[in-house]
Image (cartoon, rainbow, N blue to C red; front, side, top):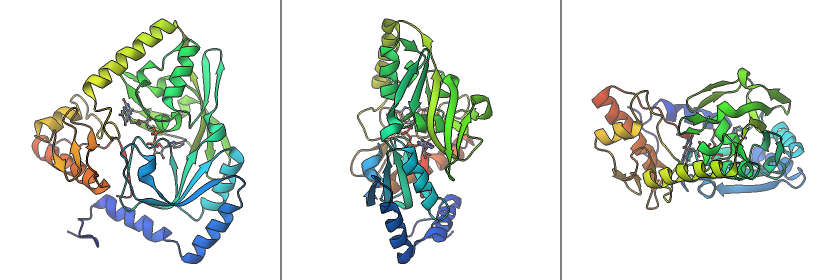
Amino acid sequence: MKYDNDNRKFNKDTLRYWKIQEKHIMRSEDTKTLLRELSYIKDLILKTDEPLSKHTSFQLGGNADYFCVVQNLEQLKRLFNICSQKYNTFILGNGTNILFSDEGYRGVVIKLSGEFKKIEVLSEVIRAGSSVSLASLLKNALTNELSGLEFAWGIPGTLGGSIIGNAGAFGSEICNLMKNLKICDFKGEIYEILPEKIDFGYRYCKLPINGLILEADLLLRKSSGGRIENKMKKNIEWRKKHQPLKAKTAGCIFKNPGYVSAAKLIESVGLKGKVINGARFSPKHANFIENFNNAKSRDVYELIQLAKETVYKKFGIVLETEINLVGF
Ligand SMILES: Cc1cc2nc3c(=O)[nH]c(=O)nc-3n(C[C@H](O)[C@H](O)[C@H](O)COP(=O)(O)OP(=O)(O)OC[C@H]3O[C@@H](n4cnc5c(N)ncnc54)[C@H](O)[C@@H]3O)c2cc1C
């Protein structure tokens, strides 16, 4: 078994992470050049050493070298032009499905705002920028008496993040509403993509082109405001009853492996409520991990590893994470 400087065990993923990091470690002259180039992008909001804990629902994660809030397509293209060949880049939505490591992110984290928050209603189609929150989208659908999105009431992500993870609940998924997708690749080329060209699965989406989602058209159907509101209320009541909505979490940690729920498996191996330092498997829903007392990302990661190992030993089932682990 190998150990890193902090005496942590290496597994395949951490080894891969360190290899990526080595490739992209910035020399001080790179940093200066990058800073100078980024500062030429008009009105770009640029922060250095930005704590990722401020941008994630877990409220965990070390610092990002660079954190850019992009307001429009022009800025985005310039940013890609500067970064995509030389530096790591990461697109962040609302950070509600992510665990960044305590070491943070060596590179540029990009968050979309400004024109990427636009919503337009065209008859039964809602066209929305990828950084629109699902909550705003739903409020808009309700005002326009458009039904189909009610399942997403209570999912705290953005439209972009929900497409990448094919977010779903109560038997529905975002992919069922997709009509069209606009993507920008890392060279700044724009593509319109029809849903049949996208490989969607359970909490999974593979785009035919590697890039960033700019906006999407969702096809809804006319209904009555009362009916839509009732469904939304029912769904949020269910969530309040079954999920730790007030805790710092990232939703379900693991995908359900087929016929059995991950929560049931975690309970069966006695890990519901299990604590490692400031993190614990939620006493309310075993497939949620809560940062309940100044946890470190590493505490969450160790709980994840523990559940994987214990469930595999007892049932021979491999749990796959639903959340994105970055830097482990
Ligand atoms: C209390 C709670 C309940 C939840 N319930 C559910 C649920 O019922 N169902 C469900 O599916 N999920 C649920 N989630 C998880 C999460 O909210 C969803 O997965 C959400 O869609 C993630 O969106 P985000 O904007 O936060 O994405 P982030 O966490 O910021 O990012 C997720 C991934 O998407 C990528 N990404 C984000 N934006 C873009 C973009 N514009 N272009 C390309 N890539 C992008 C990121 O790089 C990352 O890989 C829950 C989370 C919480 C905290």
